[in-house]
Length: 110
Image (cartoon, rainbow, N blue to C red; front, side):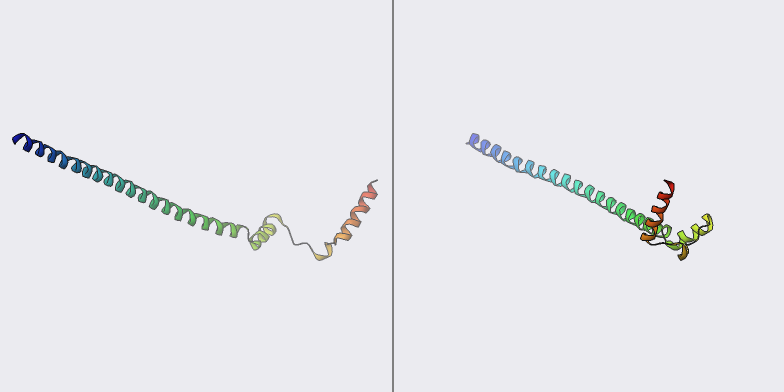
């Protein structure tokens, strides 16, 4: 009987050790997954902050472009720095007038 009892005790110990090892393995896996999740959340947060910063930069640059391309500013620079003035209406021609004058110049050069 002692032999049978010892075998049962060994089997019951083995029967307890296997589930305990599985439980410990699952705990380790759960911890690893949790650590990866926290790391991923941290990366997402960093990327979201970076994205928000880049959006602000784009807004600032768009405002600067709008200012630099404003017709009033360009007109003032053309007058002040280049001495340009608007073309008077007497100096403008229609397309038909322009082609006729160009044809006369070409004929005059021949």
